[in-house]
Length: 310
Image (cartoon, rainbow, N blue to C red; front, side):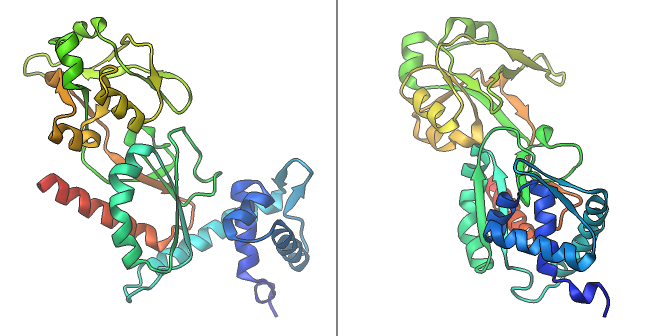
């Protein structure tokens, strides 16, 4: 009997998950196990291999040289298995298990929420977990299968799949605010207005990036520090504040499509709207990719194409 015949694939999966999360507890949560079960699986795997794979302490988990070498080869093997399953076209094939993705708030509103009904219909046996947060994150270390960010925020070592076309960033205000304070006609006019400040996920303040809008040449982006005493790190709250006349907001035009249609917000400085990076789904090139991820990507891209045609 070979070593492989004595080893459960489930134990190998536990090992890989611990390697990615560097935590027995986090790996157990991701796999739906107890920490004790994850620990027993690792002990069983090490005994059957006759080799120590992880160094454990009360504070950290670190791989041995043997553990590092084994995990690299296992990643390749599970990738091969995953690609083979993804290529099966039989109805329902590969649509199983859990899919975990990390997305920022605008993507959750514009892409994930509209895709959920069709995804649930096509992948009825997949447990989909969507974590919404705007801070930068290492999706592999966090135990995620994929993430959604703008193209320029995707790490270079990841595979990125565009989900949309370029996005348009605009300055918008409520009719009541514009009636009280006037409509800005040029970028320098923003200095006389109350602007809702943006707080990024890393707690840094964001400069509004607007187009210089010069002649027929390709407009360059210009980062502008705008005045304002209110800082918000959430798009929905910014939209609510702008509609209430608190100040001008810097927002994705697609995110405020309803408000623009109903007239509760108006775009100003339209000639200076900035062209931003498309949304991208991204994942590790060395990670087994869940077959249902391709289904989710296809749904989002199809819905985006239909929306652009309307």
